[in-house]
Length: 380
Ligand SMILES: *Cc1c(COP(=O)(O)O)cnc(C)c1O
Image 1 (cartoon, rainbow, N blue to C red):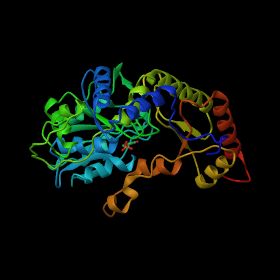
Image 2: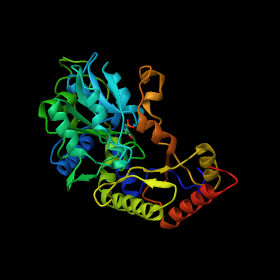
Image 3: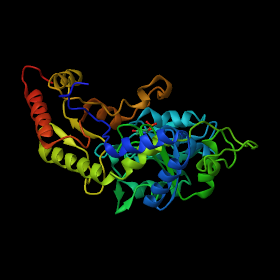
Image 4: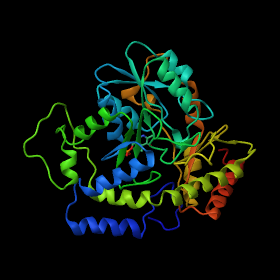
């Protein structure tokens, strides 16, 4: 990797993570064991709720749906503007993801559009807290209550985010987090489910170990069941001790990571204030921890060229996300569309954000972006 490249996102690994992984390696018990139990305990204290750690965030979404008994032909409301994971976790359960539009300024699911798509088969809503944003959080829960839906929060972007001073994960129905390499904290790959629904949590503990009933406790003790029962289709979705070791060390650095992410987003926001072409997302960075920093560029005609020119300057950018309804597997019926999502997609660009970005990097990024947007020759 080019040392001068300003990366869009990255893991930040220090001495703490390396030391703890080394102790797992020294102990020569790499699978699911006491480190996973310890990581779950830490998370459980943090959220004041039960937690199950898994192999990734996608598995967290998939097993949450399965745990809620969502199956063949059941429908789940989900914004199209999300990572493919949200959609695939639904179809993994043979349920149908119903692609919804998002609010133009917050990028959070548009409940007016969702309401039009409710029918007898609708069983759940999967809101995505895009970039850590929690706009309309309580409205989503009112909506779910009205229509008697389970809420499976795709909170992959929202580890550490708060709504009305309460942590995401501490108040909802089911919250799914991701600890993949670039998320707010990482365990290499990894993810977790947080809920107050004890029955659901216990079921998921079995589902992650091939459906073997009540094997979790034995694993924490470094043992396993030799004589067992299975009632449901399970999966090999548990977290390993190696992953948990990274996760434990990262969790202890949450405040450090959160503070720098918030600071970076605030600096960007300030530099883009009353910009002629750039609009920023509606976010309160005192309350939320931004996982990505997305801007909308009015009249953007040549995004590929813009990204190429920025990369030539050593600035990596991204596009969050290619709407899922643009994919063959999830395409809409003839004549249907999601106007806000489609408009947003043509304008978005994601700028670098990770704990090691410095203020001078941000100035460099914004200066170069402005130069390119103002070039009468390039007409970007
Ligand atoms: C990262 C992410 C996921 C899935 O998490 P993995 O750990 O990568 O499986 C799900 N939804 C969104 C919005 C994400 O960004």
